[in-house]
Length: 300
Length: 301
Image (cartoon, rainbow over all chains, first blue to last red; front, side):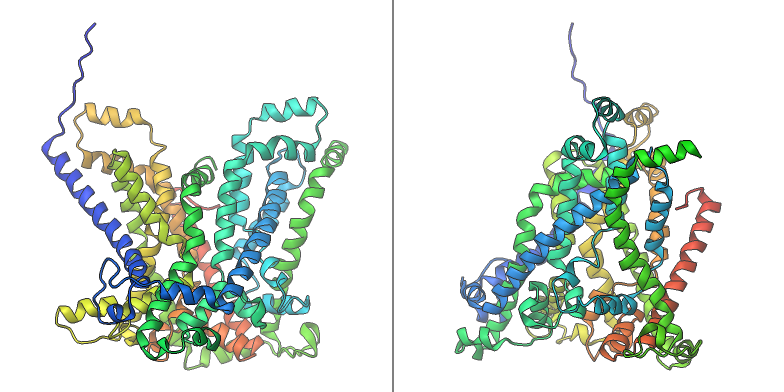
């Protein structure tokens, strides 16, 4: 038998539409990409070139001086370390709490799960607001401790709902029946059957929570006072937005600070350094999170 | 009754699992909810919440008669409606366009690049805005002076604040926000497209008659959620973008609550403002949801 590969010719109107779509998408992508490239290039250029506007796409008069002085600043390195601690411990608390909440809510046999669900959903629409929450944290003596950054946001309701949907729809009910036949109780089932099957959703959840912790500065702003506890984003805010020059950091670059341009380049380099950890993680999980959103939105 | 009791007993392990998160909800969500009563008291830090004297609606009176009040409401509403109108259609259009692209590499690159800014922190995002827009040294200024415009202090112009806030937000979130629509479009049965093609429908017609109707339920849900958040414009970004020059157009309710409440230690007044804000939000959510149910049979509850 003859297989004839026949391609249906696209009508003229369709081809015009496609050209428009490709052009628009291409332009949009360039608009997103350009600022990012510009920042990277500026951070690697000489102060003179940045301030005088010679940099517009690639680095001019290449220089990595800004990065050197960042890695010599104890304040920034401490911020890095603190952010790492907040992110690792915080994400662990978030993921554990989310699973602990989502798994029981996914079990149809559990009496009263509707009430627990309601208890949870109400907090999505009603909240005490900034001041009462602050007073609570103060009364619990968590002000100016790391706990203030871990406990008040122990899990996100949105993530619980996604995880619950995943447990209900993507793990075959037969598995549970079979394991119950074998004498497997709820906790054992969660640990040995459900969790190993939930790796994709846990990966996405971990990324979301981790990025949240890494990028958070507001909690630090209201709850922390001691400089030794400040996360990177808070340190960055002081340097980048408040322009509070750090004497320690300047000490390393005393003579170069006389030219205002170095401060500019330093800021571009700070931006790059702050984004690197997230950007390293991003490509690995990117395909997962698209899947994660699909699980949450479609089968719900 | 007896049956339920045996089921409860059989599920004891599940209750044990859920205990910690439920305790968390009660302590960190419900106790602050009762804490809002300080909005009706003259809160005194030594006497505590229970010991402070009741003052009724005093703080609400003060709010409504304050000269700042109309400006706060106006800025809050303008910024959030501007964000909604500018930001809501873009992800949908992006999803529709991406859905037409079949080649793998182009599609993947576009997705990967447009999603990325979502993961940039607010602090970094605002720094980027400030650096690129700063007069004399920012890249935008260089471009503008190349085109013959004199130096513009973008963030110092009250009239430009809202546009900068909104469009930088669209830049950052359009890709990521499109994911949910892409997911919805990927659920369309391919045989529908084939049938349409047999009937001689053009690409444009397929978008209008297949893709758009597919997106309506999720669009309505997203719209309800964003309308319910109209009064809760993002505190962090606005606060970081504020400076004394643009304050007349950038001060919103949430930044005001923070400044008066925490920085000014005026806990009761600030709670009253916060409470007023969340009540408006709740009313909006309920109303919009009711309208959506009437009009399109899609609703949150």
